[in-house]
Amino acid sequence: MILAYRLPDAEHAESLDDMPEFIRPLIELEQCVPSSFYINMLATYPDFRGMGVGTHLMGIVDGWAVEAGCYLASIEVFEQNEGALRLYRRLGYAEQARRRVVPHPSHPYTGDIVLLTKRVR
Image (cartoon, rainbow, N blue to C red; front, side, top):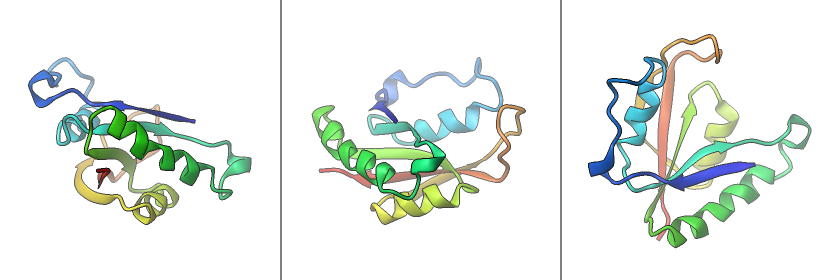
């Protein structure tokens, strides 16, 4: 499955003041790429990984981005998710920024969250 949408323009950026601390780095990274076509989530069942499903889904993003009037696609990934980083880099995404993970019981990650982008026009 894939969940993706156009991020708000810079003048409509959310205030970080009312955000939970562990969410702030994620929103800060989104605010680095206003108006981009943001891939919020990409997931496949474990039994289907390595079969090209993620690559196929990511191949659809460029068309959606253009339809949404975007010239840039963006995605965030925990640096520990090496498989996802490899996939996105292989598909032409390049690192733009990083933020430290704020620990939280809902995820096991530490280290950095990486923002990657790719020009789609």
